[in-house]
Every structure is written in structure tokens, then in C-alpha cells.
Length: 432
Image (cartoon, rainbow, N blue to C red; front, top):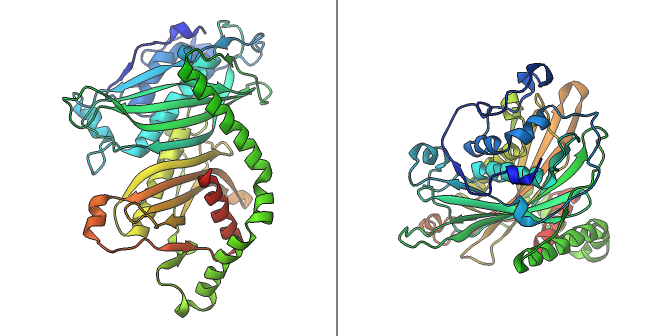
């Protein structure tokens, strides 16, 4: 499909609970997937709006022509050809506002994570689409979220805009940068500033073979696009080097830190009366919840929507930080998210969280690093596999801290070698 068929102007987001399929092409009922295999109805207003803009392309993805030939020739596209903008009219749509409002009159970060994933997915499809409707489309999945940083609180009373585009491609991978912008709280000031940035990485698979498939090339045009491409290329090379060197670094350079962490944990386990009162064992910070994945939460491929998984992981991470700090937490970053295995409708999914480590040297903004691991559990097979890993960073709200003057965030220490390795690996990743 030609990328010109996607709208270039901002897509307005409106409050709606209607079917996202009402405006889609009807097609021949005999050639379409049954209703039970369509994407779920759980999705947010953003996902509904995006469906409306891409319905012709996604009709093909609902029932991809598996036996059709693959794309014969890769195209070269520019970032501007994949760029999309969505606009939340919070200032005038009070129902939409209530769908996104959190208890502090800010935007619910969990719902925003869903929307970011949906927009990034649409942009990846837009970049990978070709002009030949007789070829079979690519199967695009979220591989990871490289970094997501909240630069300022996001008000739910002021219009919000998300702009995204492809800024780098590899052979079968695509990196998409999304910027969330909002005017200052003083609405008389017409300027906009970036409130949140995020980098999503998608990988392409062939629908028929399931193997990695090449994607259209990218040719940055402007100076800014070229700088973004170079920065993304550097991050990609760093990821590859880090993967190869991670174990060697722990063996050769981290032995002393590893032993020091374990020594503190052994005091808690063997001599608890002598343990530091300002520290706590990692295992004592854990929370957990579980769910059965429902068909209302599936994406166009029949798998569970990645944004939904991020939403649920964020809510558990927030609760973990709250219970640990004893004060209302404030979100800062999604440090990294790995989508290791797909999650299917009907899967028994368990989210397990803990405080991995803290940084309290800066008393004005102590940092709480949370790990959430999602496991697909199959009791009948006596198996449990990790499907996703999420890493979030929180601090405490200034107003909450003011009411607890002198309170210190406790240090987290491991009780096992496996916990110590996880802490060191995450500290290393965060320092890059």
C-alpha cells in the first residue's frame, strides 16, 4: 500500500466506545477471518482512531495472503513518509479527559504506554508497506522499548500531541522515536515542549516462514534526521557489544562489587539482629499479580497487545514503589523493556515485581529502580517461561517528601548470587 494513503495531518483522538471496524471496508465475508479472530475491543481511543486511518492496510493483515509472493524489491523511504501525529483534545473533550485522568490530575502513564505502542506499530507498518497489493505483508512485532523518559508531568486538562517517525532501520529491525509534547500549564503561552520521549524497536518476520524478513531502507533528509539516524546506529552497535561482553565484565571487573553486595545480604540472612536498619532484602520488596489473557486484549495477529502488557506492568511497578517508599511515587523512566516471547489469548500470565536497587545520594530526588518480569505459566505442562522484562525508575513526589522530612529511602541488598547478578547487570545498563 502506498504510504500516501496514510493521513499526514494530525489524527484527532476522540472519546468513543464504538467498534473500530464500523468504518472499515466490508470485503467479501467468505475471505475474511471470523469475528472471533479479529483484534480485541479492549483498546484505547487512540487504537480505535489509528485503526480508522489504516483500515485498508490492516484488512490485509487480518487475513494475510500467505501464498502471495514476498515483496520483490525493497523501497527507500524517508522519515517524513512514516511520520504520524495524533492529537488529544483534552481541553474540550471531557469524556476523553476522564478516560485518561489519574488521581493527581495528570495523564495515566499506563494508558499512555498503550497508545505509544499502538502508534509505533502503525508507523512501522507504514514504513514497511509497499505499493504492490499482490504481495504478502510483513509480520511486525515489538522487540523492545529502548528508552522512555518523562521530562515533565503531563496534565490531563491541556491538549496533548504525539509525533513519531522511523529514525533508523537495520536489515529486519526498525527503530521509531516518539515525542509527546504539551504546552506549559500556563495555556496563554502558545509554545510546546517535549514532555516524554520514547524509542521503540520493531522486528519484521515473514508471515509464511516465520523467519526474519528485510524491511524497506531509510534515507534521512534533514540534518536532524541524520543526527537521529547516527545516534540510533550507535545505540544499536552498543547493544550488540554489550550482549557479547556482559558475562565477561562480571567475571573480570565486577567481582568485588558482586562480593560486597552478597556480604550485606548474608548478614540479613545469618545475623538479622546486626543488619543495617537502612537496608532491606530484595525478596522483601516483592509484589505479584496474575491474570488470564482475554480475547478483548488481542492485537491484529491474535496475540496479546504489547501496550496492554506494558500498562499492567507499569501499574504493578507503581504499586511496588509506593509500598516500598511509603510515599507517593513519581514516574521518571522506562529504562528498558524486552519482549522475549509472544503472549497468547488464554495464557496464564504472572507479573512479579521487586525493587532491584535504589540511589539515595541525591536526597532531593532519590531513585527507585523496579524490575517487573512477566511469566507465561502452564500448570498442565508444569512449565513457566519469561515472556517480558520491564524496568522502571521512580522517585517520590516532592509534596509527599515534604510531609516526611528526614525520611530516607532504604538500600536494597541481595540474598542470592542470582539476585546480585541481576542488580549489577541493571546498574551497568543504566550507567550507559
